[in-house]
Length: 391
Image (cartoon, rainbow, N blue to C red; front, side, top):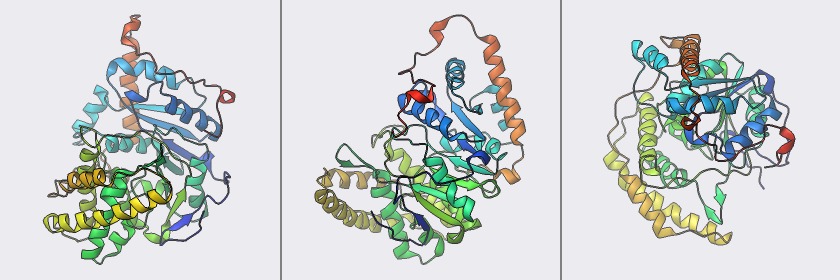
């Protein structure tokens, strides 16, 4: 346990308490895909959110049409003011296409669609839906700094599970790449990007006024791109990071279409886009060797830390990952970010109308053939008394 202050105001979990926070004036955005349907972790999150009772919960759902009705019925079991935005509906797709907003689908695009709806409240909280250790404390902890003068807060935590260090994309790619950039460029935005203890955490909160200015990456670069947007608006003075304590969620393989390797490309692209926004022309070729050297040194530090704590760490396997991630440091692609809602060519009400039209069409077309519905992986009781509040 420590209480060291960073350049970003750091709130530590020195006691296991839930601070007073304006949850009744906050919207919580929880992006989901079809794999979250009926999942134990997602059910736990929804049950815990019932205890928080935010003003609204917005679920941007990316799922095929034959899964959506059953998914919505499952979500409706929870006692929440909850709005579903089906991100793949034809009416919504048409709305985006007509206004030049169609393009790559991904987590960032989904969050952007929901964010417009969440801006109806004074504050916005965004977090993932696969957190096995989710606690009702997360939302008020993230909101607390906003009630005391900050405009943005980001969660951090230690990724330690099964006697191993995780958080590999942050530890082995993002952190050493930012340190390599700091060696080359002397600029406040890079210092800001390096000041967060877990910059790739999916958990953050912002005032709606600030969130309305965010241009969001469409895919996995969402978290890094958001930091770049926040720095440009409020910088160190308006930012905080909050200890969320124990944290466990799904682990991805390095390779594959949704693996860490693919994610590293999106993270690198978002990071370089932030630099360009601040007048820096990154030189990927010159950075690769410096990144690899920095990552190699960090692995030695991680190995010693793991040894000290009796944890397993395969240093050679981690160096192999670094070699894979180095390939992600490439030429910056085109700017495909979605516009800030304060300047968007559509309104959030138009999004809601299109999404609701798509859901109504699905409901009216539904047949009695139950074979089209998926069976949930597990049933989580919607009764709050059936859940473990400390899980």
